[in-house]
Each structure stands twice: as C-alpha cells, then as structure tokens.
Amino acid sequence: MFAYISGRIEQKSSNFVIIDNGGIGYKINTSVPTLNGIGNVGEQTKVFTHYHVREDDISLFGFGCVEELNMFELLITVSGVGPKVALAILSSISLRNFALAVITNDAKGLTVAQGVGLKVAQRIILELKDKIAKESKGKSDLDVFAGYDDDINATGKTIKFIEAASALVVLGYTQFEANKAITSVYDENQEVEALIMNALKNMNR
Image 1 (cartoon, helix red, strand yellow):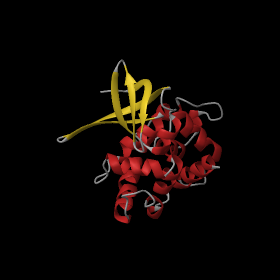
Image 2: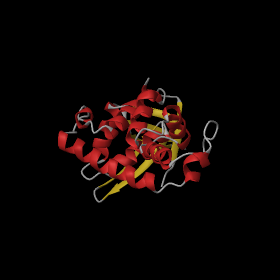
Image 3: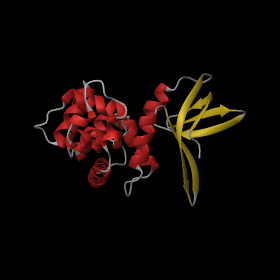
C-alpha cells in the first residue's frame, strides 16, 4: 500500500519512529540499524515501508534502505517468524552476516537475536535455503546480468554464476551488488554454495 514515507521525524523510540507527513504522524516499527541511520528528531527522513495486516492488528514497518526491507519481507515468509522476530534478527545481525549464516547452516549464529531459539533458527535456514534454490533456478541470463557487465560477458558464464548471483538477490542484495560480489570471487571449479559464501565473506571485509 505504501512504498515509502518521507517527512519530519517527530519521535524516536527503541523500536519505532514517528514521521510527520502532511500533518499526519505515522508510527513506523523498525530496526536498530534504521533508527541509528535515519537522522535525529526534527530532521527530514525517508523510510521504505511494509504494510502489515492481521485480523487484530494493522501496522507499518519501515527501513532505511530497500535491502533491509527486502530481508524483512523474506523473513516473515518463514513459518513461525512474525514481524517482531524479523525485527529482532535485523537489529542483531547485519544483512551480510545473516546471509552467511543461512548459506553455511549456522543456526547458532542466528540465535543471538531475541526470541530466536535453535529450532526457529533451523527453520529459517531450511526454508530460506529452499527459497533461494527455487528462485535462483528460475532466473534467466538476462535477469542476472542486466545490472552488471563490466567484467563479465553474460554469454560466457555458466549456470553456477547465475545461480550464485540470484541467491544473493533473494537474500536482499541488489542485482548490481550480487553480480559484482560473485564476479570478485568467481571460480568455475567451485560449487555454487562456495561461491556465495566467499562472496559474502569478501563483502564483510
């Protein structure tokens, strides 16, 4: 319903911000990284939003960048993971470390987030790895190489590159970031999972 909301910051709390837009104050639930990065009370800001509707609640969730929003929306597709748990994960783990934990089956690494036990962490990894696999295999060469062709010729790369880059897109990165990251570590002798893991590690440096 709302792609983003921009306006003056009226109030900041530990887990939400109120933004005044045209005389209307929007209470937007958000993560710690977004709260730390959007500015101070009285300043203008912009957040990318998710409109969440349940039988007993209607809420807005907002983030300082599209990548964080994409990760939030990916997380709440996991059975048993609601918006509060998704926010706890985004507040505790960086986008890259989260992606790395999923790719490397590091369930313990996800339990640092409040409300995430080992069983929930394992379910997140299982369901998101399945989703990554399905989404990456559905990408075409043109989808993957549309945003980046400086160093790689799309016609000369194998399905490994396509699947690895697509997996990063599913995990919340832009197509340009994904293509560039895989390009930096690409080795035809490596498996897809290794390419993804090495790309994430490289971005974390």
